[in-house]
Image (cartoon, rainbow, N blue to C red; front, side, top):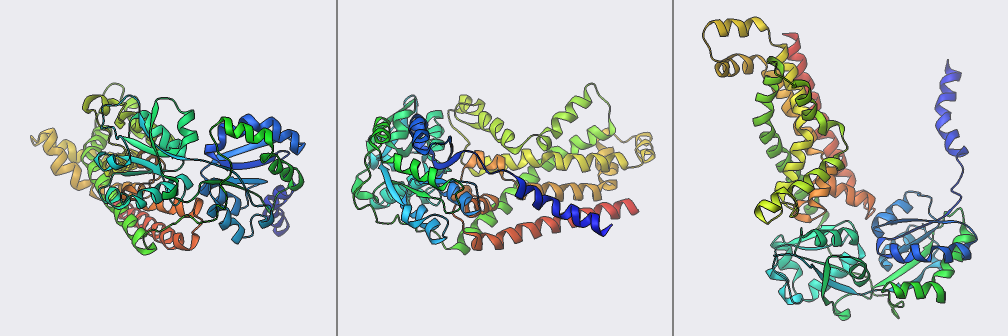
Length: 484
């Protein structure tokens, strides 16, 4: 038996060792380079002598993947500091670092919108919402913050809750295209390639660090020589011509000044996110209870046509991915959704949106145990109450609720725990804005993007222990009810 256990334990490692390496040269690049690099793909493949595949995303996210051992051969970031972090971690070859292009920061607005339209940067304080990339995650966001800070606009906009931060520049463009925000700060190349938006003004280059795209060979590359050839091709006349066609500028001369990354102290940032998570989970659970308790009683004690279909719809958010729930809610409460058509406004990027996401995702975890608790109450008590002349509402208040109180408390605790840890749907509705950044989103940013694992660990432990304590308490209540 011990021999078989040892073989099974070694199986995962054996499979990993036996797994073939990727046959392609993998290039992880800032998402703003996507159209240009896809157009230049044949040129890069010709230079590398191998097939080239791309992985696009926010520079910080891609850097985090590389540091965690993702099979990447060549990295192209939208700023130098992100590459410098990988150099410090010895994840890229320092001798291979080189600038390949530049860009320009511009202010964009939706073409068709009834919202106030800024004529220039001085009008930004009049807006309701301004979108930019998350400065901790997106280089364009860091450049945008530098620009707003130089104009003495960042703090007033931030304190008024008017800043909406996104995971990448493409998301900022999407927010503006849909009219969910009044304006956005993006690269000129992203604005040039997008429909339905207009460029209002360009940022003064002196107001922010020089914008440069920096490439580096990944130290653990399995295709080092081919990747080096592809990197060399990035500076060739042919590839530079493609970059120019998409609006990129030549690499800025002497672009070494680091982007500022001032932020709140770690304790303050995590404490605010933790308190916000508690607030969102508490309100979401309270709102859910108002509907889930009577609904669960109805499902448990009454028969009505198509009850099975209704019950299936109730538990659907428990089955489908949270991102699907987030997408559906985004269509519902966005400016172009039902709420927007009725009011002309949007609920996206607000605390109410976070509460709504947590409520919908956690709702089934209230209904299921509550329904079981109501169904487990002895039928004879209900019959005696009915024969005594109590109305259905009176039977619900004076019989069903007292008998199922343990199951009700258990269900509320489970729903609270799920709401406390909600991430996927919430991220789609509130993005990464500081004023709506719950603790799961904060942990996600620190672990997958900024690689600040030391800061994330305490919050991961606190969130896990809180969830475990809630589950243990819920189970204890359920067993006490069962043992009666």
